[in-house]
Length: 547
Ligand code: GLN
Image (cartoon, rainbow, N blue to C red):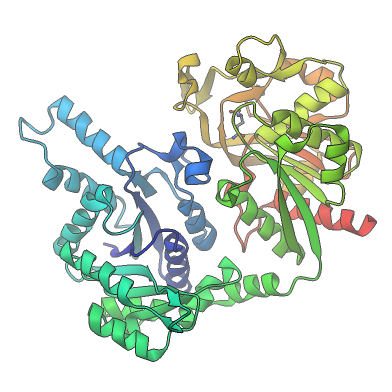
């Protein structure tokens, strides 16, 4: 059975608990252990699928089609372990399962209560597959003291009693710096630990986020007041790159403190070779490129977290620094504006998105990239925009558009080049849906295969003609327009195995122009950059040499 590490947060949110958990996972792996990371989110949404990216950042999609918290992206990037449905759960999901069971009569007439019914459901979730790994890391979203999180805290408390000696608690807090006093303050951490202890949880390890070195005096004080070993007070200082975290936290003693808390004395020393290499590539770039991301949720970096990371990985692969500028596609009102905003970039990326707002600007960005030989990567909606652009401006289908926008603003009588997919096959079952599913629910989600045309640029980039990539969309490019669009030079170079759904388009006569219906960014890792991103950045490097 696995050993459990529960990671909680205190004082304030956004301290980087997900990252700390991911880095700890990577450190345990480097010592030869197997790990799995899980996220337990206290909010009442059943999953983040319906939450606005402005509220919650990116929705991370797993191979098995779960829409999850973006922290699962960090877990995958740092450990290389693909997450699945059973690695992310919310209060909403737990309550909905409990209520379903109640309706079915599973509880045999009992009164349903938070303790034990809700907490048992949480414990059952935590235990899934615990025979398969050495360490299970469970991060509790939010901050200690949040009302919705109480059942989770109670469940992990009970769990640590059921499995005495096999569970530890790591608490991440903030030491604010008071400039007037010239001091880091420990009081908020003391209060946060007090709050945890009042619900029966005594942390074994304190990770202390801080903008300054934490003097020994302060660490001893924290150890004394919070009842942890002085070596278990781990400073977590601000880092320039998130990929420094495993090495920095190792130096700060994080993995050692964890092993000590479990009483493990014979652990091998970690092999950090690949992290040294990753860091060397981040810290010593040999050039730089400038990429424009033309999207809708540009005000919030977290909305395109995986894309930003995948671009960084592409940069590491090519040993260049990637400077990203986020451009709101709504700013393009005229041709001059498009040119003035987009000139000078070495490549343009149009990411995924939902809804009509800003789409005309994205179409203009695709056109600009095509006409000016600028490398273009269109992801999901970004591919659909490239197809509409070619249909309108090259194939002469002037009113080409997507049914997504038609259904939003009443009938506008467009030619639906992009249509609503209502039925598809998944394994041996056919999935159907109707218009009422539009507000969430059924999307084509998770990993699907695609077949690439022999001799295409994407086949060369991937080095194979069968690929599997993760999807999250409702609309598809209509195959009936294939001939007309291909005649313009935009080729359908990747198709679903049944030949029905276009997965990739590319312009062979352009330096680098590719649109993909899936989300390659979700599978990119620092030590295994996604081939499309590695190649896209390489194209940007070539472009930068031309100017
Ligand atoms: N809105 C588009 C669709 O549903 C694109 C989705 C996306 O970019 N993730 O098909």
